[in-house]
Length: 510
Image (cartoon, rainbow, N blue to C red):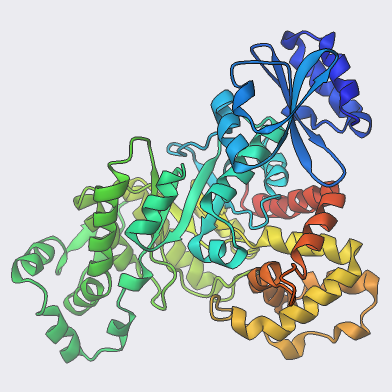
């Protein structure tokens, strides 16, 4: 155990000189295997993470009041009780007691927040290193129920991975945990019970997309089915009104437009209000609430955006951020597709509406949307929430392609064969005919598949199928080798994440 030598260093060290101790660990990382920023002290005990042959361990050198709470192997080093612990959920619960900075928190009041979802549970150290010196509040734990189901993880797993990363990196500026695209009371409660600090409520199942195809007569008929008193209340606020925003812009609600908006969004507003007031508002800690109307077929017009926000606030909902469905396409893993000029015009008005009400605009499927990042950064004046997720998986695949070409070739062929199954969960425009035959590609050229839109999307959406595939004996076909490859090339993976996310931040003018 290389880290035993580091324990001898600690014997001679004063906790007040923590920065010097960490610097020594950094200088001798290859000798000790100690993650330098993880070194901490608590009431007579030193805590730090070490890199062993196949996995990381938590070392507690010396006894404090929490020593016996940790599950691990107790040994003696330099005559001092020492515990070697796995980085499991139970031990994470205790480390969060010992070091409160490893707990997630609300991001209210933070100008720039970025969801950096980590599907593998190993990307957060790279994400932290990316944002550590920037005015960015990271949402390190960000997962949807869909992602949990596809990867076989739990919310407890997701949060623990983020907390261990925060401990490893000694990151004390705060981070969030987002229960992303939740759709039911049960899902919201589960995320909150697991300690998540943000709820993104996906109301797509309560949005009636059929309304846009109705005739004028059908719209009128459906509208009259709404309770008369409710119609009167809404009409008094919006119908034929010219509503001035704080910047002087005007939102108009003409009769036909107004009725369509009511029919499309009213049920979603009622659902969100019920969830917020009955579950989120009663939570004993501060929760960031985001209303998502982006995963629908209907682009959110400025009038619809105003109506949704106004009605939510009227019903007692405190909105931290709201995610409209913008014009064009925000497909997974590739750049924005659509009319940039139209996007700019409409986005600017969406920003004005969000400022009028006092919440942040949220951009979903935000990874790799390089052509619109400058617009987002400029028009929001550095006040936004943007979500990325799958891009860290793609950077992991890039590292695999560069260092384990045999594994990559197997993953690539499997992804091509199973992409139709993955399309049940994700909308992409990938065309397999545009992807070159991998058997004709040299090993050193495999990484270029991660730069080509079609192959990039195929690999992006098949992550769950790849991670959960088992052979006839029930053994993982890819997962174990994926993790072992990335563990062996940890520095390279962190570098890839830093480079990729930094490109996002640079174009967003952060």
